Amino acid sequence: MPSNGWRACSAPVECVGNPNTRPPQLRSAGFAPLQVSLLAGIRRRHASSALRLLLWLLYLVADSTAIYTLGHLSITSSRNSQQAQHQLAVFWAPFLLLHLGGQDNITAYALEDNRLWLRHLFTLLVQALAAAFVIYKYVADGTAAGAGRTTAMTLLLADILVFIVGVLKYGERTWALKCGNMADIESTVLSSRHHTYKSFFSKDLRFPFPRGTRVGNSLECQRHDDDDEEFLLAAHCLLHMCKSLFTGVLVTTTSFQLATIALHTHSFKADLFKLVELELSLMYDIIYTKASVIHTWYGYCIRLASLLATLSAFLLFQFSSTHGYGAADVAITYILLVGALVVEIVSLCKAAGSTWMCALLYCLGWGQPLSLLKSLRRHVRAARKRRWSGSIGQFNIFDVCTRDTSKIASR
Image (cartoon, rainbow, N blue to C red; front, side, top):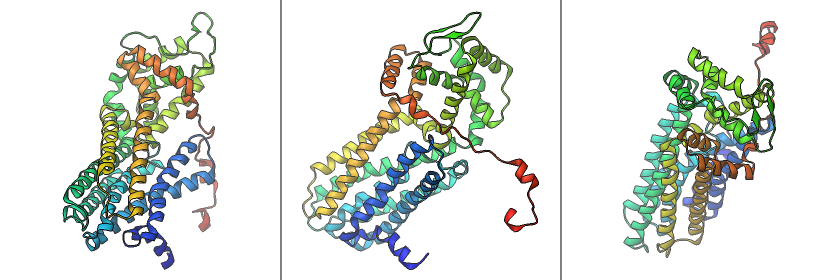
């Protein structure tokens, strides 16, 4: 890469020493994850090659920029640790950990990314140490000129809260990559295939298909415009069987019989394709997003704790003295705090209102909260966001077997 390219990459980081370059850091380290999040939501509904290429580039740039910036901050921290105008840069290192934690709707761009979860775990350890070093040099190493001890301690407490949230979010992303690995999915299928079906069918075989379905000698159904939520719930009930098909694990006789009875007793062929489509959508969540981690008891705890910690950090900074700090530094810090707070609120609301929460309420037998949540989801037409692109990639084995291997281009 030419030298001017390296200069362009390092310009966002040099905001610690040059106030004129602080806005580029905010754009590169903050806006790239937002763009990735928007494109990731579109990818599941559109299979454009240009869109996939743009998402891939942003996916790489978002991580690389945050890692490079955090590393440079850790190197330059000792030079300016006693300068008042640089004290607010202590906030920027933990926020870079938040960016490395990624968005809820994308953790892996391809299946191969899930196999690299150990690499992300190592990166988490290194970057967490780098962020901790920045905190130590900027705050714990002494108070800045013009900043009181109380203000410095308040800033330190707020920064520790953001640091904890960043470590939790990056750890959550790493664990989601592990859970999205096919080997891990296969192990969960092998360890719980009997228990999963018992949990869904222990009470009776009433399957959550659309209201108005009548079963008799001839299968009929009065279709409703709002039956997508019922189909999503049915897809959750058979998701374990879908996982077994993805991993090649043989389905036991008992579980196969239960699933077959549920399908052929309460459904009809025309909607089986729709059910499969929704199951594939749920598998997309498991493989490419944080769904497998978010919708667990510790995932919900992380969501709630992250929101409370971010809100506390915002209030601590709000009520602390900003005298002696540059106006640009204060503005950037407020933008980072408000942006993180909005992201946490949206993340918690999406988790609480997702179809995965509907499945959890169904398993727990909480009928009234389930009905309320499904009614709210129907009102905003949340199920329509799960539409897929209508195409899948296939491996052309005929082309591989018949191509001319004597040519270098075909090898």
